[in-house]
Amino acid sequence: MKRILAAALSLALALPTSLAAQNPQNALKERVASMTARQKIGALCVMNFRFWTDSPAKREFYNPALAAESPEIFQPLNQVNSSIYKCVRDYHIGSIILFAENMSDSAASKKFIRDLNAAALDGNNLPLLFFADQEGGNVLRAYDFSTPSAMAIGKSGSSQNAWLCGNANGRLLLDYGINVDLAPVCDVASNPQNPVIGIRSFSSSPEEAAECSAAFSQGLIDAGVLPCAKHFPGHGDTSLDSHKDLPAIHSNLKKWKKIEAVPFKLNIQKGVPLIMTAHIQCPGLDKTRLKSNDGKKEILAPATLSKKILTKILRGSLGYKGAVISDAMDMAAIYDNWTSDESFVMAVNAGCDLIINPINVYSKQDAEFLEDFFCKVEQALQSGALDKKALDAAVARVLELKLKAGLIKVEPAAGEKEGGARVAVLPQKLVPMAKSEKQEAALMSNKIQMQATRASFENIKSPVRAHGKKILAFVPSQDRMEILQKNFAARGIEGAEFVSYENRAAPSKSDAAKVKGSDLILVFTNLNGSAVKDKKLWQAAYPAALAREIKKAGAASRTIGVSMNLPYDKKIFPQEEGFGWAALYNYTQIGYARAVQALFD
Image 1 (tube, rainbow, N blue to C red):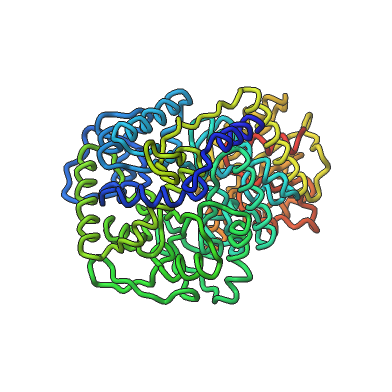
Image 2 (tube, rainbow, N blue to C red; image 1 turned 120 degrees about the horizontal axis):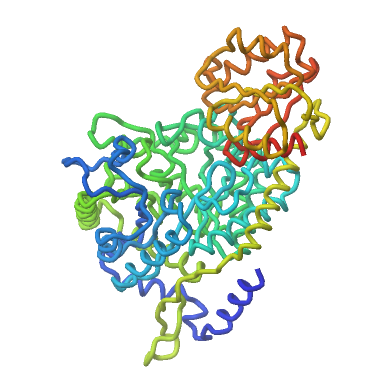
C-alpha cells in the first residue's frame, strides 16, 4: 500500500505544471484527432485470447460458440503466437480481458501479459489495459488465494471486509500486471430465481449492496487497480441468464431509482471510473425497438445498445463522467440477434466506450474474420451509421482510463510553445505481491468467510463434535465429495460415509436406511436460481425429499443442512423441528474446505 502511494506521489511530483498538464484532456483529444479510423476502432476493442487451435473446421461465418461446441480441438492459451502478436500490433488493440484459461500457470501468465503489451508497443500503440473478473467466491481468474463471494462478505456484517477483499484482489491483479478488476457486482439480489447473479451480489438490500460495493471499489483503488461497477442498470431482478437468453427487468423508473440504481449511484458519487452494462431489456426505462440482423424481428433494446439508458439516464440523470464498458458481446443475448459489427456500432452509438469480445480470435481463420469485422465497422463510420462524435468521445474516455491506470502520462511536447503537451508511454505497471502477503490475504479471506458462515448458524453447537460419531454426508457431486473426504481425513475424522446425489430427484431406500443408523447427518446443497424457479430440478428436489425422510426417521435434531450456494433452501430444514443450518455462499472447492473448518474447528 505504501509503495503504491509513494509511486503515485512521485509521479504527481514529476508531472509538469504546464497548462496542458493541468488539463490533460486537451492532450488526449489531440491524440484522438491524430488517430486513424482503424486505430480508434482498435482502441475500443477488449479482446480475449482464451483458447487457440491450429486446426479448426473450415467455416464460412464467424461463430463465437465454436470453442464451446468443439472443445477437443481448442486448447487454453497462455503464450503469444505470431497470429495473436500481429492481431494486437496491426489492429491497434487497446485492451485485453484475461480468463482462468490464460492464468493457470503464474509465471507463464505474467510473461503472456508482458508479451501482449510488447506487441501493442511494437505497433506504436499505447500500452494495453488488462481486465479480469476477480470478484471472489466462484468468479476468479487468479487462484493464488480466494476471497469470499460478495454475498458472504455482505453477511459478514462489515463493509470494511469488502474493502479488505477488494484491496487484496487488487494487489493480486497488479502482481500479474492487470490494471482493471471487472468488479464489484452492484446488482441487488432481489430475485431468488436469478440464475446468473445469486451469491455474486452483496445483498438483497439496495443500501447494503451499495455500501459493500463502494467499499470493495475503494479497496481496489487503494491497491492501484481500477474497479468496474456492474451490471448497469441492474441484473439482480432477472430470471434468465444473459449468457444464454435476453432477460428483462420490469421496474418502472420510480422503482428502479429505489432499488437497482442505489448501488450504482453511490459508486458514481465515490468516483468509480468504469461501469459495465447489462445485456438486459428494461421496458420501464426504454421501450426503443431494434431490428434483428435478419430483419425479421423487432427486439426491445437491451441496455448495452440503449442510448436512453447509457447516455440519457447514466450520464444525464446520474451525472456519470467515467467510461462505460459492455458486457461480453459474444453472449447469446447479443450475438443471437446481431452480427459482431452491428452490435459494435450500436453499442458505441448508445454510449459504450469499451467493447468486450467484439470478436474472438481463437485460430488463424478468426484473424481473417477480424479483418472483415474492422472493414465493416470502418464502412459504418464512413456511411455515418457509426457516429464519429460518439466514437471519438469513446476513444478519449479510454485514454483517460489509461491515464488513471498509470499506463500513460501527459508531458510537455519538446520544442512546443508553453502549454503544448503530448501523451507519453509509461513502463508496464507491475507490483509484485510477496508470498507472505498472499498468505496473509488467504488468512484474512478465511476469517471473513468464517464470520459469515458462523453468523448463519441455526441450532448448531459450535464446534460440532465429530469424533466417535457415525457421520453420514449427502453431497451434490462426486468431485465435491472427494474434497470433503480429504478434509475429514485431514482432521482425523474417520468412519464417515458419503453419498453423492447428483442428478437424482429423490433418495433411494438405501439412502433412507442409512439415515436411521447415523449420529450426525450433513446435507450439503447447491441450490441455484434455476432450481429455485423449478423445484423439480434435482438440486432442489433431492434435498427437499431427503429432509422429509429425515423427519420421518426422527433424525431432524441430528441433521445439519449446509447451504453452499443460494441460501434460499433454509426453509426445507425447519429449525423449529430441530434441524441445524449453515450457509457458505461458496460452492467452489475452497468453499467445501471452509465448510468443514466452520463446522468442526
